[in-house]
Image 1: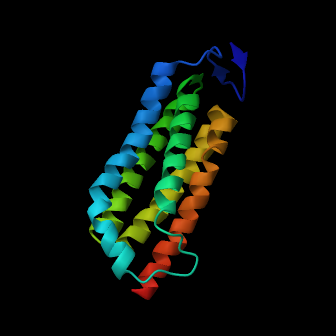
Image 2: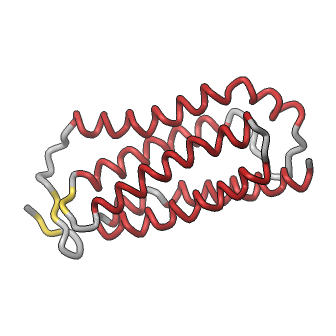
Length: 167
């Protein structure tokens, strides 16, 4: 085995396709299910909600989220395949933030509770921040793959907060 970072060890460099596909299925699947559950509420958001400046067109959201969920799955796979005393914590935070992400969409789009959604998103942001730190202790590249997600959540926080003010 090869030492990588602070007492962590990579498993052999051969890709375990079953584990990688399962990891992608979990991350992308959670996003897809959440998207399906909120799909009927999207028209209300598109047509009835006053949106702030810098709001991207609706078609951008599924593209960006799909890329982010793929990056999440790859990152989780990298952490899972690395032996480290920090692996369990990183994967626990990963699953917790994935669950929080799933429910944020329902709170925001279906319940249209924008204030609670913003608070929920702030907690999600913190979870992702700590997940990145934990993943970086296991495998720095895995944590770095999550940085676009944190940036997007920051932008989503701006949109969510502005929607509270405008509506």
